[in-house]
Length: 456
Picture 1 (tube, rainbow, N blue to C red):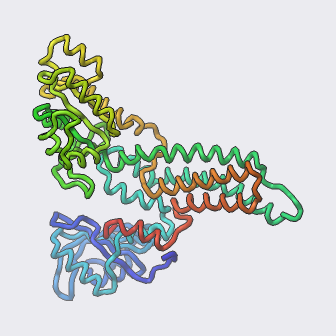
Picture 2: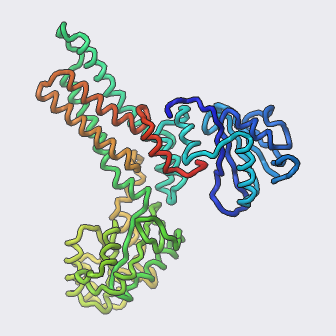
């Protein structure tokens, strides 16, 4: 669907499913106001000014369904840039269903997932990268995620991509011009300048590609395992972190990827602790991870916090475990808990093997450990102000852009004809255009917006 004209009016619940104090039902389309007006008794919505609120009742004939507040937004001054209505009703799902059913009987249809945002994009409210950031903003569960999504929704990332495209388009047009005058053997595009431009663009694109690891941390949190022998202090550490930071805790089945035990927000980053009961109950040292479930959970982690009870575990055993930890690919921090119970000689030995000292029971050493955790996931980079890529689709298109630009450089160096250079530049422009939506396909839009919630 590439057109910007829509003949139908869509309706959906915009607030979460379930009983609550209030719910909001959205309508958008050419007939949104007249359809809403046909079931509303209060004032004449067709005569209302944009951005006004109206109190009244929704009625099915003489039957009053609910008392409501209706918000009127007239095109183009609405989220979708179409005439839009938001009906704020009481949060009973029965009431919501009756209102939506009534609005559908009067001529609207149920919206598809993401269709409100899709219409906003197709009407030019924002580009595709900004549209995708709407979903990220709604799902943001940390300050870093909110800040990054807000920056992208406001066009920060899009401006970077637009600037890259503009520079490429200039040279592409020069090469195309040379092709038009090929018989006259005229050169409009300076090959050396083009190569310099491509190299500069590659540096910028490499920086964006490299930011994706950090972006993934911002968007999805850091899957974290706390491992160690039984009674090493895992629960005590979690409780200490929670008490110190007054962080978010949720005992939820997080996503299909992880079984979440707790979520903790440190320094604006969400750390998602994976349930490692099997590992916790069965492992003496890291070599003993033979339990299949424990291995699976360890592999899901992006960070391992390995806790030692230094009051009972010999230093030599700790060294063996550390050597085994170094052989596995996942970043880890070694934590020496119950440091208050060891003598000075043992403390000195532990310092030499770089164990973070901690007394989880009293939170002594906790702040230093939090700093070490944030450093381990490069969380300090969150406040640099640089653009961060958080979307896998954008990351993949940037890699394809890079491949095309590397081919351009090879073509210039080997003196290949303008036809091929122009083609490679067009490929790069195509992939950049797919990020922001200058180039779209129905399949692309369907894939992106189908992952949104209905009503978004």
